[in-house]
Length: 326
Figure 1 (cartoon, rainbow, N blue to C red):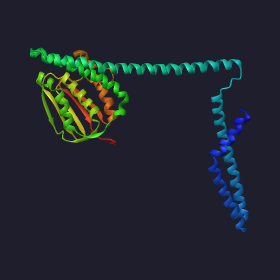
Figure 2: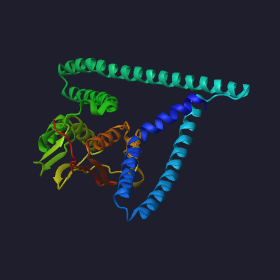
Figure 3: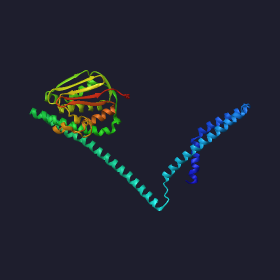
Figure 4: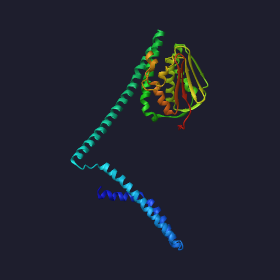
């Protein structure tokens, strides 16, 4: 270290410890004042003053030494001065690698943003032909064909929305709006959207004990409900679905295929479709993963219980954290 760095350290140290030195001066000033004020105890006060002065100098020296070592290490790290030609060459190569790494990171981030923009644009644009196809289907006279095509278009639109929701998860908090919502209204709105599948399969629906208020973001919470209900409808061919609230938990219980024990622990993993998904070819492996991520962000829990051949029960915890309501 050169003289300039030493001077800088001294100035920095004195400035950073100014209040500490001020307290010491006040303390020793009081002792000196008492030393002149009480003549009978002057010897004792002088002894105490000397001991304290010695201890103070020792502590101060240790503090200066530790601070100087840290300062010197920082300077050596920042300056990285080479002591030989080989060190200079290595330092230059390290600096070039750091620059390349920064450029590579910036390029990858740019490509990632371009890719996100492309998929977002694609998802929005594909909705136009889907809407046009839905209008054309309405003109069909064959009712069975009309119904089947309508259902398939509904599935396509749902998958497109799933992609959009997955992309928007990156900026989850940008448009988060928390309000008091009626749980029964939210459930009924989602059920109404999927009513065509209940009718087609002849499934029963039992809603009860849902009249309660929760604090949540309606858009994101509805995504959880949609994904959970969609999964139940995919794998339920007979019986029905029951949705009810008990305590601080919302239950969605179906009489579907059920989930194998080996798959239950992995159903919330991204891309995992499980045995049922491979069997029916209807799973994207994103629905429950997305639902779990959203639930965590909203302060809800998401879990399920299942028995093969007996159905699945999904549990959404509604215990509210301290959330700001707009």
